[in-house]
Image 1: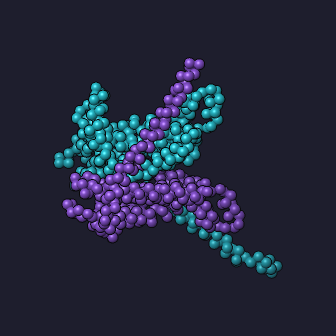
Image 2: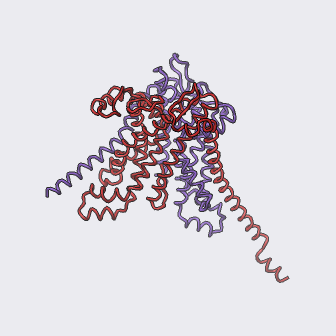
Image 3: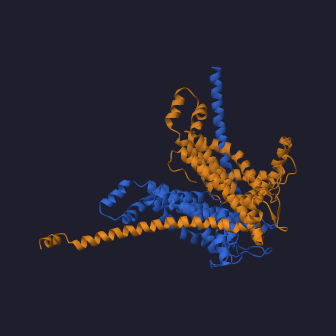
Length: 279
Length: 327
């Protein structure tokens, strides 16, 4: 009986420990979000934050308009390349990929997924910056596109594989060619998974800093030509955090809050969309 | 002529044209898809060259001595990677020592605890949200909140209570191996929890029920049935998180203190492979200096690929060849 009591006690103790662990894992998120909101909100609500360019050091005010435009343009171009290409490769893997080429693509995309983000920066630098001779937003887009590709193509493959074979057989039995079956029956059936993959990839790309350091480098002025260096929100956070001026540091917090909002909203949208479609 | 009538019943040109069109459409489609797959392989090939070629001048200059030298002097152009390899491995090791027990416990809670649904669901959500927070934001928070806290409170406390250990001796600075390790632990926790949770969920229910029916408590069941079964998968999850920790750049760069030294104390400032690359890249001039930085990148990539391939094989073996969970 005594032994049993000890075992039950141990069981309770472990249950409590496990709850402690989950708290320890979740509390950093809460603390982080609280700090980012408290320190970032005043700066974000300040007039001109969304519409002004950064002011020179010592001049109060200023905004991050250049960085917002830069992030949108860089991630936008990267998505224009990565989403169609990644989806097509996903279709290849799921519909035609039971061979050596398919296995090679899967292996390569797994390796790419595990690479540190800074490696994509080196890639963008050597392939575009070094050959063109100057930093540019377009090279940042190239680096981010390669970073997004494995996420998108694997999400597409997983979503397509889950579509029941009966749908494929039904389409083919009605006499439709393979490409019609794939594009008009299989892909629409798997759309939720594909869109989620694309949104998650875009969220990840929008938050990346390391690849941008090697490719677009940043710009204090408004630049609309993607062939030239542009600013980006993540670069604003990184650079302003490391200077000893509180006005710039406040702007770093505000930009961080904006970045967290963009990334979290995209993430949540992706998950909510999947849930609604699955229902 | 009788053949001609038969042909008129089933108009052959139309049927033939249909047939040919269908074959062509499918060929084009499959060709497009295959082409896209080959583009990925080509990108990977270019990627390998892009990492390797710029490092070539340094590889020629220093050979294998690059990996064992601890000198990093841009003025005399003598470069060695040892302090950075040391810093990368040490900070990641600290991160895993902190994150592994916490992550495993949290994963067990999320996978095994049937009750308390009202906190399980928001907790899962919060942990997934943390996985999506950009590393530069975590770095900003760490720089302004965690570093001062480490300098004024946590490091002095550790020096006071555990100061007999050499790793907890020496001056405290806030920006240190220990701070970087803690930041990395926070960053890999969500991945570790999500992956291990999914691995634990795969353990067959009948095994748990058998153990419980024999009179084992929940804890005993987890310890002697669930964990042994999931061991390979959990090891894989740990290695995947380790891969993330090794390559994390921005957040570490902001808190590690940036000093190319190997020191025994965890309170000392250090440097990691990706953070020296991110910091010195824009100021690097000359083929040798740049080449040395790119060679650091190459070393980092090789280490992470090794760890990741090992991890994938383990997770894949555990799940019996089914699709591994992706984060």
